[in-house]
Length: 532
Image 1 (cartoon, rainbow, N blue to C red):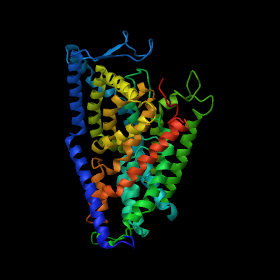
Image 2: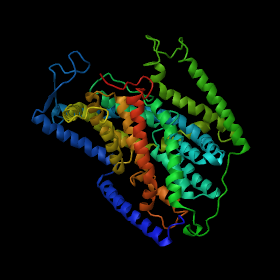
Image 3: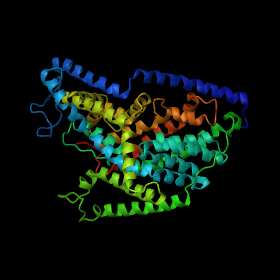
Image 4: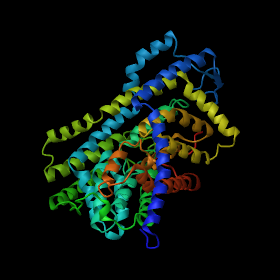
């Protein structure tokens, strides 16, 4: 509480702000509750595509193919018509393609393979120890930056940041005499609002790129989108988001929270002792770092020299090389090897059985994802078979051009739309599987490459996570915050996190425009900005 405000004045302002955000939250919850479970949603959408294709096919809805003659995938007569699945041929295709739609869905295998390596690093304790070491060994002057930064890079192992770092950050701030909710907010902002940014490629990269590739192939059947296509932009975003998060915490959120009042917390709250990495863990971290450096050095020999065996066999270039096409295998290796070395030194992994158990545990937690993928794969396949995505994209692109929204400014609306959709549909894979088949082809026809479209989506999908009650960990964060303020409600949590969402939206969007359209930098290795 600031010195020039009375307790009653501050209380009145808090109640007014909470009331506004409570009404906003109630609206979001009402909209979110209208949506069924994501699995049910994709099943219903698949059925809707079948019915819609039958109706539009009956009326022979078609558009002119905008691709030049001789282009890959162009129709022979230059006309793209909606193909009905409400026919004998349609039913046959659905029945025979049900399994192959699922097994051939690009994100399925790539995510599972990448997760196998991450699982070893996570279950050995490497990721948790590295995170604690980064945050707890940081100088007090940069501890806020370190917490937001650690939150961003924790996204490699999704729930680790939520379960480990966020409560740890609150405890660190409490032990330093700062408001623990400010520490919680800083970590939550890094983990959730900075979700897509990272220094290394993680499981989210192959997940999104597979969906993007399937959507892009509606326009260009031979188009390939690798997991690495947003790496440059997400690498630089990590530092920008960490700086913005630290500034918002120290200049907006922490001053608003004021001095921590112990009487607001439940009875019995004590400053808890943080567990810094032990001497054995530090030794294990050192050897894990050595193994990581050696692994990267060996991999570099396959791609950096002109004679590298994983360069493109015909052109000798890095672009389109087996190295980039097989990047998921290297994600697996660069997590699994240091993870095992750490576990071997610290004693959490003694043999191959422990490694296999770690992988099996991670695969066991993927049941819901695999179920979701089955129905999402049918939806994407039906969309492609019926030509509905292509027809919508061509008509949508024509509309954007007619109203003059075919320039870079279209991405402001696109990022904003993704952020709004994210308020009611929290899953990144579910949201992108629904929107990509429409917006990727549409913006490709306007002239932008799928890699840039995906990067813009990742900005919008991330920044509103911290104010979305549909985000799966929102209830957990609220429970953690209640340890330090017993009367905290969702409106208060939303009010606390909204500055991050607003500043990240503006700052990250500006970074996107500067990086892509001012500096002309690619968003990732071999990634184009414009689609010809």
